[in-house]
Image (cartoon, rainbow, N blue to C red; front, side, top):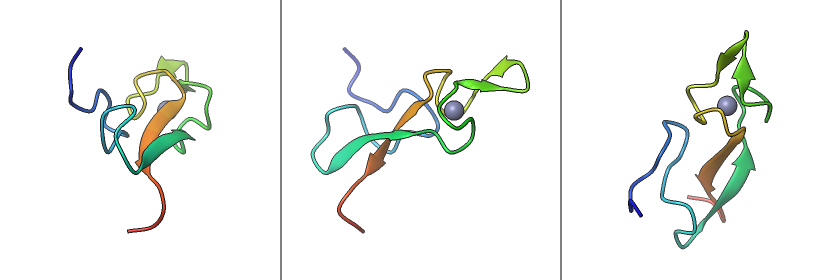
Length: 54
Ligand SMILES: [Zn+2]
């Protein structure tokens, strides 16, 4: 398993402390933008974001 963020929209690897999954704001969780796979989330519709404020 890679220990680096997979998609541009991810701020950290999945499961990293202080982070959580969130719906991708670019595609709205569909993983699809104008018929193409969303580049922000890699088509998953989910991104990893920091939680708890920064
Ligand atoms: Zn997306």
